[in-house]
Length: 134
Image (tube, rainbow, N blue to C red; front, side, top):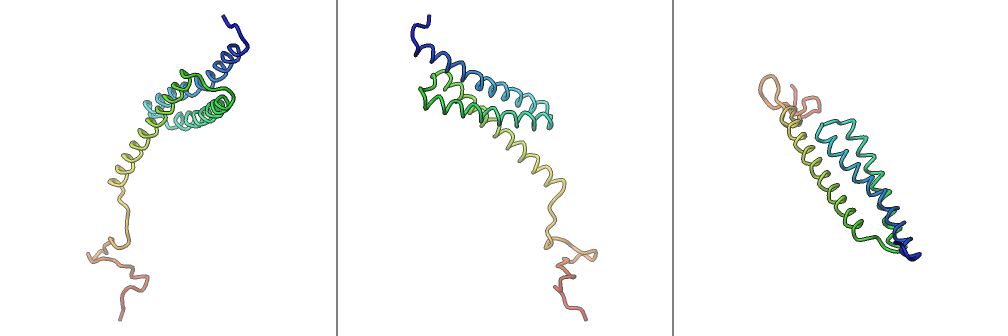
């Protein structure tokens, strides 16, 4: 039973922090699902929602830290959520790098110095005055 004003305030603060933290955890789950389904539209939407949820949670936790502290259990859950965000970011970076490599193999970049003319010689910018014509 809650016996004091401080205990009541601590319970209220815990409930106030639980909502934004649960929103972050829910958005992380939705992001993992969208990644697994490879759904780019859902990824964009959920990533924006996660960003907003994280911003709200960090703001609420910062305020709580300044005005009385954050319960250890909620601090731990926020740290776990932050770790999950880092894991998702790393997975997305690896997927992006893999896609970039595949695109590079399929559509190599064309560099002007590496092009050859129909006669087989390097075409080094005949239009730019790179050769002498008689």
